Amino acid sequence: MYPNLSYFFHDLFGTEPDNFLSVINTFGFFLALAFLAAGYVLYLEFTRMEKAGILHFQTREIIVGEKPKIGDIVWNGVLGFLLGYKLIYLFQHFREVEGDVASLIFSGKGNLGAGILLAIAFAAYRYWDVNRQALPKPERKTVKIYPHDMVGDIAITAAVSGIIGAKLFALFEGPNSFSHFIKDPLGQLFSGAGLAIYGGLIVAFIVVFWYVRKRGLPVIRVMDAAAPAMIMGYAVGRLGCQFAGDGDWGIANTAAKPGWFFLPDWAWAFDYPRNVLNDGIPIDGCIGHYCSHLATPVFPTPLYEVVASLIIFGILWLLRKRISIPGMIFFIYCMLNGIERFFIEKIRVNETMHVLGMEASQAEIISTLVFALGIIGALILWQRSRSKSATS
Image (cartoon, rainbow, N blue to C red):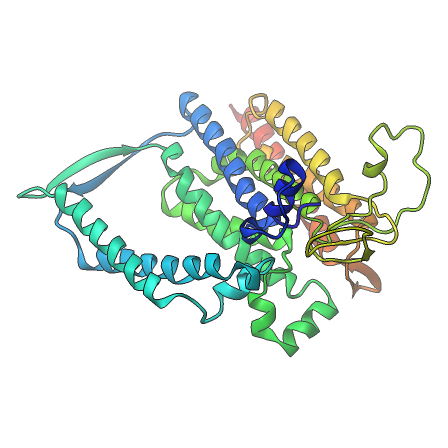
């Protein structure tokens, strides 16, 4: 396992673990890749829909050649200060914060001198860059904005809202999570641990839905385009869980590997050596900060979810040109995603809650609702399509 990038380079090149690369958390690295992958798939779908005449450009009036604005310069100065204040301190004291960069980000620690210098540099550069493009008389200009031009904004909006949603849902994933939050609300809220993927998807969907409507895009078409993008992002994110060993593994698995299971032994039962949680027992002769492996091998459920997600992505990718009913691809995604997550929960380690006399995890409950949403949505769209065909 690679709790951070220093361990990856240790395996690849033999460098010492826990060096300056330890500030780059493996899960965080893959989380960034997940949003990039989802954004790229969304870009491909938007481009295809534009060529097919499904999505259209919008016109927007902008002003070019304006003089530098005080607010813009101040904002860049603030950004420069934060980067200098935190990043320089981080590289100076990475041993103190390795594996828990979030604790530094949400603390008062930092390098004041570096923050001031970068604040001045960022503000000065912004002033110079805008001023050199300024015109004696600013001009109004009408430009075309295509949906694929908005992918970056959509991806950033989804990333920020998704992480917030994942963190908030994780705080209430089970009775123990809630009690820990009550005892230490700020510590739990700002810790680097604990993310509930469904919370991220739900909050990101709501916020992006609002953003898309505000931008005047047809929401139902964007939902179809987003479906394969979301499942691809999910697959890449789960790779981060697998490589980091972040605790999203399954229950203990001591059963012999069945004959039909064609993957390697470690894909059947895995002990997650060097996992980022340092769970388990010590590894003999191990060097580095992370030197534990699970005493009993478990189902590597993140790996199974990667495979399942890629299969779902393939299905959606094949269907996206064959199904003409707007919104149907999204609701098929809901059904497949709900099925996948519901059954993987049966072999995952998770806190459960008592609901209507039954014990279920938060993810089981939500996956059931997501599946039901998919079924209901697909039936409504299919019925509407039949009604339109009958009256035309």
